[in-house]
Image (cartoon, rainbow over all chains, first blue to last red; front, side, top):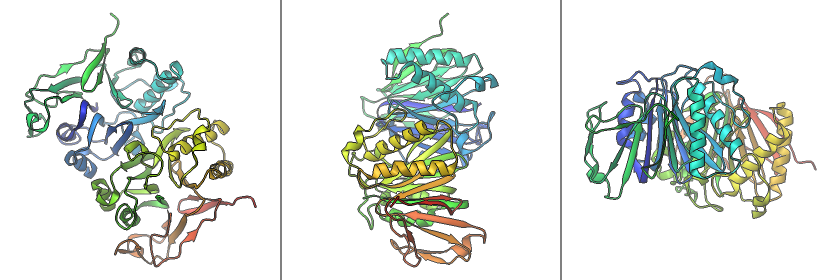
Length: 261
Length: 261
């Protein structure tokens, strides 16, 4: 399985601390040696770093963990390959443009080969992973259903339906964004923590590192971090339920959708 | 005006030397302080680094000039803004997916505002530059004309026609690729040099640096570098004519198309 990391914040925030924890899982404390990637939105712009090399050895990963790129929406992924060989075009996050927005996506899990029979119209995969195929299928559905951008509640409900369809094929844990909204969907493992005033200290589980957020924030900052599993061992993370979608905006929960009982 | 840099090679080659020269023009020897970007193909995968900060001061640019990312097809751009503010979404190169390939594009020049009346169907700009709009229009034309990938000679002739249309709106110097082919088109300034055995020494115009390619190549290597203006001062570069398209593959000229007299 792979590791996902996302962030939604109300002020441009760097993700060095959480990324340092995640990086250890890329061949250090974890078995995820098959590449990694991280995407930062800055306004409508999207900056993605990809590396098919293990993150714990990656010169680019080293840069990211030291160089504070500030962003309100971040999506990151460390890969343990199951479907598709280890190469750049199979490295998450993936991106495509829809409605003049750059959509960015990372997936954790595995979907049955049946997926590759689902027809595509507008978006086609560059690599050979089930993950990228599912992304193309998902954006295809959104584009066909909404030629123009709809209200966010309509959009969320529709994306949730599509995720429920994908979940019939296997494990589908998702991070997805168009810059402002961070859509998260859980089949098996996804959790989040919202940090806001009064801030305290957080201590990484994967290496000996702590940060006192009080010292690096203002009282108005709200920052949510989403991860496959908790990245810190002295804070309480919330877990998404199976079939649940949570949409974050400006670091806050905007919408929660559960599977119909 | 901006600076373009491209490379086509028959073996994965790093571009550290040429990029070091180009970087100096981003606020060093040149006025192009409004961001820069570089795209590397690795197989079908595309890795793009973008930075709205001047390249000569950029930590990421520093990494690229030291860290030998090897690629057969590279497109790079340093920006001096004319249309569109300085921000990530206005930073070249731009990319979109067509036929399951990542297309990548950088433009030097300026097109009249008339361009923004040309209708778009499939691809829409994320930022506000004339350059990205022209890219969306160009890919729209290709997609409508060829729902499936055509023969390369057919494709080249069609892209050349589209470039000729764009040139009616102003200056359009182009670098474009889908990974294997590097399409170049010139209105005013674009030149190239092909380096192959026997290799010699090359000396940068923009800073005190030289490289002996004999020492870092094998006798079978063929590497073409394309740039707005020659990057070295001891080699003879070929200039593209106005209205000319040259397509490179594996470091060699595959096709040259001139404007009909």
